[in-house]
Amino acid sequence: MAHIVYRLDVGGLENILIELVRNLPRDEFRHVIICIADYTDFSARVPEDVPIHALHKAPGLGLGMFARLWRLLRRLRPDIVHSSNLAALECQPVAALSGVPARVHAEHGWDMADLDGTNPKYRRLRRWLSPWVHRHVTVSAHLARYLTDVAGIPRGRVRHIVNGVDTERFHPGASERPSEPRDFVIGTVGRMAPVKDQATLVAAFAHLCRQLPERSAELRLVLLGDGPEAGHLQEQVARLGIEAQTWMPGNRDDMPEQLRHFDLFVLPSLAEGIPVTVLEAMASGLPVVASRVGGLPELVEVGINGALFEPGDPEALSQTLMAYAQDRERVNREGQAARERAVEIFGLQRMVDAYAALYRELLTARAHEPDPATGSR
Image 1 (tube, one colour):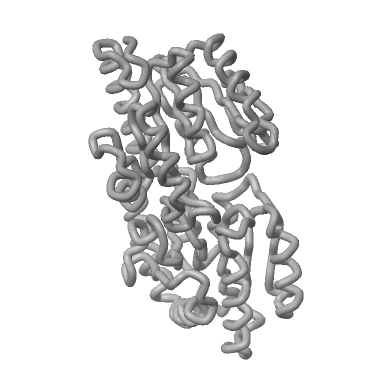
Image 2 (cartoon, one colour):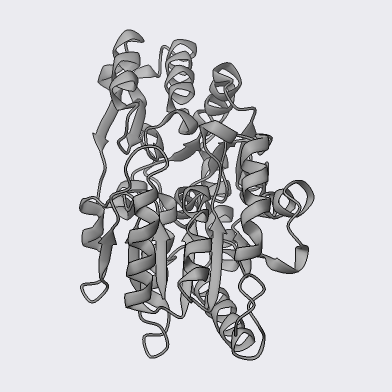
């Protein structure tokens, strides 16, 4: 099967891709990854026996990319194409015309150009290209409702499969907290891009330090990740005078260990699907404070395993952070509930099994039914 992504780089979508490649039954599925643009050092996480192809799409329409993709698919002859997110959806007609019998497109979330799904251009694009797709997969119920109720895609062709997390790799640290006072670490993980809005978290943390001057030396902020906003965030940290309490090491390959040093996980995004970073934090036994957008309310049960706040509101976020910083018993209680929820609902094997069942279902159907897009079997 061929997985098509825009760019293979650090991110939640890419983490899910890696988990599928690693964990789908090897006696049934062989994989190839096709990047519309290119790939980064993140590709080192891909198993050695999985080829990676880059189409090097030029800016703009990049029509030559479609010809290269058609030739590549004709040579590889995959049984399944699985594309991810809107940038790869336009590859589905090429996959159909090259003879790929089963075609899946997954929606993992939103971007700055369409934070809430109201952009008419993208809504029309999904509707027009949908006939070339056998199944649309969404990671959240919120996205599923958008595809059926707004984009007008038939419900029978939309499948909701929640993301999964390796709850053995991501797990809590020491179960007993030290009794003496210690640092309170507030952290986030994600690509430093406008849609992730780490700037709101930085502003909220600075406000928290001003609210609790007697404890400011114990408060710590960790921003893990890299991206185009990294420089602006560093400038903001310096301007607010919180450099001594803030750590920004960039991307890390030891994420499970890093999360075990957190006390509280925060995701201030302006738009999201079902972010893998939140699942990893929950599996690590951390309460989650997240913006009330996209699929995040499907993960965070307020007062049970975390809290929600309105996006882009640093003062509201600061008040929520202060409540946790002053109540370690709540931190421990909600962190335990987060871990239990991750294990019960968002286990990795559950996700892998759901995708395997979908692929098998489509291959069986395509063997007996004509392709709705091309009319061929």
